[in-house]
Image (tube, rainbow, N blue to C red; front, side):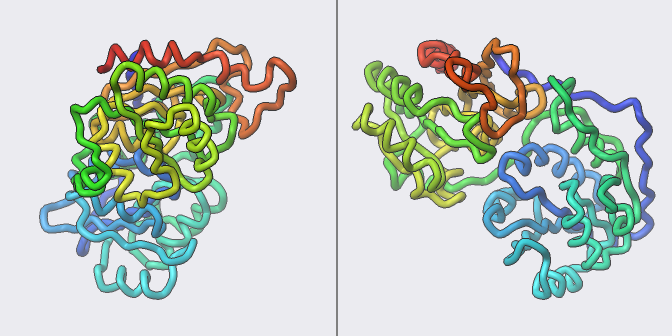
Length: 353
């Protein structure tokens, strides 16, 4: 089915923060996972638009994800953290940049600790986990999700942005600037029926469509004259090799791409098939359509934002369970994933082609 994110405003009041002095701009403490980061982009872009002219947007982010923020032309300075928590060099740089406001997107105590250590005068985030001790302004804590969601996770990030001003309920992804160099070096150009397959998902096997199904799909696409590229981190090398054995013509780049190269490739393939993963969110944000297979998680909460995407969800009564591994045994184990057949995914791809 075609995926359309549900965005809603909350009925609960959001305290509006009155900023008297922005100093040199706003510090944004980024989320730590690729998929989560991409779901924050529309809200981060609205924060950028709320800032007075002449102020800078400074992003504090874990080093592995810095390349994505550097692809945002509306971000002025990206500050990669060499360690898990902010350290001396980053603190000194931020003291020179002198932001007057900080917004922390994650709900962790550590992210609030990071912005507190910068001594930014106004520090905004969500309450809970003793974070209120470190923040000057708090919003209600993130509600715990039980069962199916009622709205997309982006709604919560937009609510956070609304503390500084009016926000538009939109899932439109902001502009990203990505080089075509890595894609060109691999011989990948949009319009040549390139299908990317990303068989991984960091959360665990309960989010991962079987590699055998990806292999069948790769064969089906190749038989129709299409070309296939396999993508993923080091943990996906085994799955990619299994797919390659069934479809030797596939270009296997699993474990060989940096984040910059992954962005380049996903921006230049024609379609992507992925699980609920960072690759899914990244392709959608870059304008590349595709098909997502959901097992243990809920597309209403974490579906792709940006390009047209189709989402396949099994009818298993236990889904979504939000478990890393399937707790069932025997024929019922991972039924939510095995129920979705390669032929169904191919049919959705052909509608997008």
